[in-house]
Length: 94
Image 1 (cartoon, helix red, strand yellow):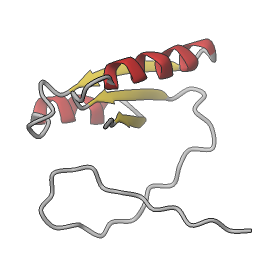
Image 2 (cartoon, one colour; image 1 turned 45 degrees about the horizontal axis):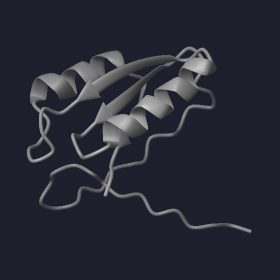
Image 3 (cartoon, one colour; image 1 turned 180 degrees about the vertical axis):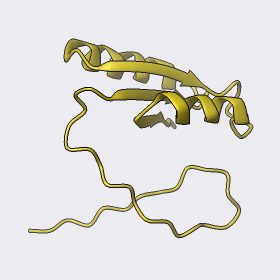
Image 4 (tube, one colour; image 1 turned 90 degrees about the horizontal axis):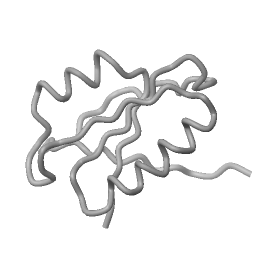
């Protein structure tokens, strides 16, 4: 049985862009996992739990955060994520 998955683009673009979906890695072993906090209430708490689970599995984790949820992430933050992380989990809430 096939299930349909819908992916939402969480960026602040005013018009959706069509782009190819990146192929997920077969394993997280040896990769740096970026955990990105967008500044919503309790998203840091969620990421604390995710980080603990990844750390238990001996995976490398780096944390990133926007200064506020009300604005787009600064270019410096985005550049750091791109330079340092192989895969990224973005914490949303509400």
